[in-house]
Image (cartoon, rainbow, N blue to C red; front, side, top):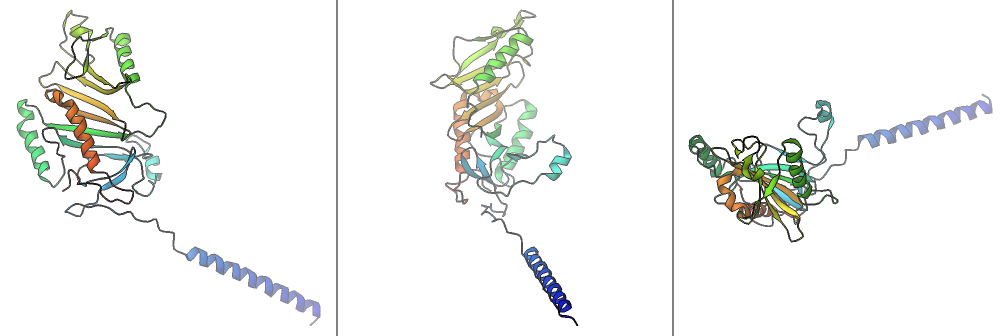
Length: 294
């Protein structure tokens, strides 16, 4: 065999060995297990149910299992009416105490500041009140609470624009002005639609669908921090109560019977107290006793 042929065979064997070596490296790399995302520590209730965790506004929280009323959402989650294809493809980032919470809801008892939790006495209390008070037209002592994290640093934490727009729409669409009343009510500035008179009939409003009472609280800088709209023509009037909290960087909505309006300040304080009881470190260590823990 010629020397040149031996040289070709040697070069071929060398190239084949390199290909096999690379293939083996690739196989080894592909066989390596995927890097595991650390699983966070979860606080649990007496039934072993894990809390809902994340960061609400500026604070990490651990919401007791069984408290959230039907819905919770993290920033980036598709909305309820999002395209099903988008929902199917969406993958939420791994849970952690830094994952920003967009919103969630719960029920809170106005009379004592306790929270509705499934598999806890408050679940029976809620059902009892629902069956024995509402059918007989008696005030319901539970408030529906929705909490929204505010993450846009450029967005003001006040209702200045919201209220101005409300007054503008009343004038442009329903053709009446909201008139500030001389007397405050429970420390709130009161505005009534056309001073409580239906402009079409010249008589007191019989329906308040577009003419609810508006009650406001401003801070020292004149910014509207509390914005409440209340019915006044129903057998049991209700209020939608919204407020901002600068420390948490959140907006809170509370709905309740108007008979509890005198306690509006206490309600704001108690909602924040509930949230404070759910605060944790970034590792999940509780900073206090959780209200609503089963």
